[in-house]
Image (tube, rainbow, N blue to C red; front, side, top):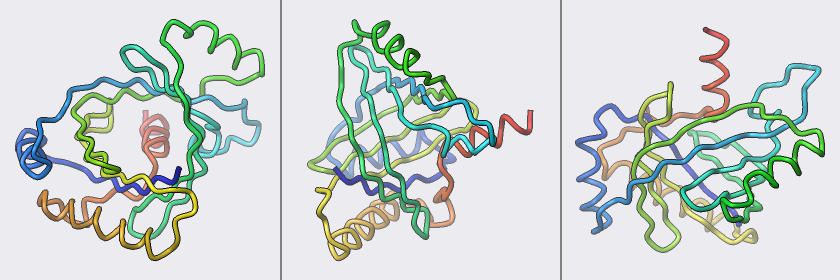
Length: 188
């Protein structure tokens, strides 16, 4: 699948949630996600966003394993090709042992807490990321074979949704979360 995503900083999440509820005509579902990124030990100290080769996302009853081929476009729009599947949380120890046996190591972790909404191929998240603050993520899933016209139409829909939420283009974050996390780590 191809994921077109925009994320933006949010100053007042308590005011934004009812707006999203209204726009999507449904209450958001609360969720906590822990993302653990694996990669190889880097001798050239490459940025986390390049060192991380895949992600394990821990949910209440499952682990989603994701490999993304990322492409950051102008205006903070991500155009990612994804390979993704899930396994039962009961497989947690086996999954860790498997990846460690292949010489992968944890290169970063992040915790997301907040609400999400799904409507057709559109997913909205209003989330707090530990040490980074509040964000809104607006993402749309397309088939891998989607053409430029379809991708551009989706980008417009995503920006229109942000505008309906009273989020300006200036609030859009053009860096990956892992780059933001690394920036904070370097400042510490």
